[in-house]
Image 1 (cartoon, rainbow, N blue to C red):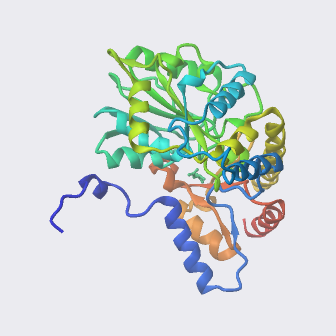
Image 2 (cartoon, rainbow, N blue to C red):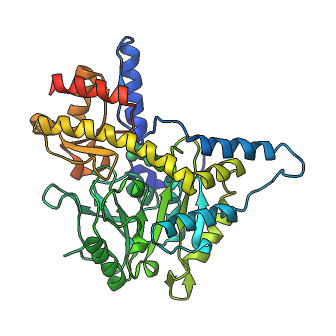
Image 3 (spheres, rainbow, N blue to C red):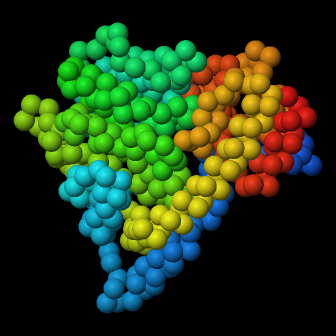
Length: 393
Ligand code: MLT
């Protein structure tokens, strides 16, 4: 063909981390038909949707089959009933987020990738290791990326001290995927103050906030000044089991201004052009999940996963293996034993114990030598994995 392609795609890995893993596991399973492979790799949930959520979806689906209640195109920014439910969810956590600043999406990943559309050629600051979507989507747009090193010494919580930045876009994820490390109020305040001082924008991924137990910020808007420097992106995937249902939201406060241009207006314009909203039944399901009763059900599921996290953490303690996470996060981030590289340990676990995890190097160079295990499996699978790991490690 006689066209030009986006040359920036030459700068990203040929395949997305989780697609790579899926291919490897498929090949292994085909070659070892009897192997009972336990998948603790991608953070995909295993518990079904709470009944209150699926009931709301079914009811809405029926409404779609009746002339009087049928609905066509949804509003591209989300129905008011869901934006109000999101706003109320924040309110119950002591945070004010106005409904008009909320944009309903089909999940955090889309918006984390799409947000680059409204941003120009900025310097990009991304902690390493972290969810690969931030790096990949900025590479696709040809942005200059500065990685901020996370390591054992800073408890995988890099801070802005000493960062050479005259204004740029900073990505933060807390609790962090993959390490499970999370910023406390003081640390997050330091980031917000840094962003305000340097005129930077923070893109804050709060997809795992519902796993926070203690006194930690569950939203960047718990920090004073954040509405002048931060966009927050959240998802119902992990908290309400929506990985296959798809719904999330992005908060773009109207107070986010670049000169006289409002980022809220730019994002509205972008969504109106490129997005046609989330289906009505899914938005009703999301509304039910965010209700007080729905969230109580979701919390039971979170507790179930956190019991898995406990089983895994106890094993790693018993084996004297360094790890983070597993307390305010569904992920356990461990040091690969015997100085194995992340991918060596991946192969070793798959071959010797038929367990799939995620190599730390897939989350950035600083993740080399580490490994992520998810607690989103069933109790039965996690117990079996713990037994296999106890024998192997
Ligand atoms: C993960 O395993 O890191 C997540 O499930 C991936 C995602 O949320 O897209």
